Image 1 (cartoon, rainbow, N blue to C red):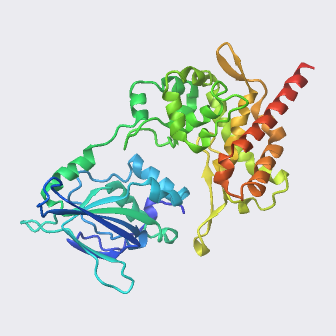
Image 2: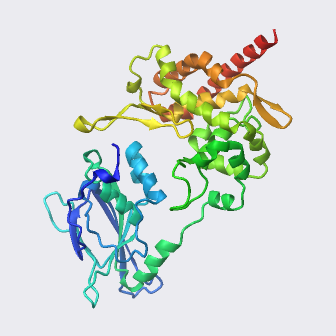
Length: 421
């Protein structure tokens, strides 16, 4: 898609209005009495939950109630642009959407019955009362990218509160100040990530360690949870030959919580000394995956369900280009972690503990160069024949993870023996 701020010319009317009419794709309304403990109370608050396609999203929603002006250069906006460019299918569910206050909401009769009218109200001075309370950064980003035809049908989640005039200022203040502090932000504040930062060296600046809108390196685009997912996959103390770290595929947040548990922490610390090689190894496997697939006879790599090589349709069809965050190598495909993580996790059997630290008993890159063809072949064969070409089922299969782990263990033992002969 190639989202670039300088390439967009907004031709839509931007003057804020107190009444807007536009299309929606889905809507649901729930209502409740404002004073819940007074059965005779007549004040009702209605909440309208909407999906609005990007092409129908008004460009002039009032922003009067929002105490913060959006900063298009802030990190949240940059992350949103990146998601919209590389993984737009995840934007709707990963983004909180827009939160709007209105005085009155109507659903006028129309042919398709998919119109909504929002009246934001006017105060005594003639100013618009309602409007966007939360989601200012999201709205700013959406207005920048709305001319991209490949995103016209992107659903945007919008919540409209009707009848909250009596406490609108409280609502606006609460929505913009009650920010939950994530566990990773607390851990960062308490310097718990310092050993990881030190061990990563030059790669440390690539990691997002805490939640913040505008502070931090622009190079940081890999969440600390993802890194701890890689460490969990290689944690031989938590996962032996008969237990598989499928959680590194199914639950990144669970991996973070495992690391956060002080009882588990020493098992992770054994891996810190080889952290740079760990991130390099994962990216090397990702980079070489297509080549290994070709070696087992896969002729149309992009046709595999779980591999994305092109995005968009017609004139908007473009090749996927992903820059790997640490090594900065470029790949022309997006690969399901359900394919890469079982192999990567199995490489924990190339590790050996020495003086409280793990080290590689064989060069892991050379190992996967030698055995990658067979491992990838095993993954893709099971993917097609046993899991209905469903990458999620493939990635969740403990049987497949076990089979891959067994293959790596046997191969690693053979190589160890060969070194001793």
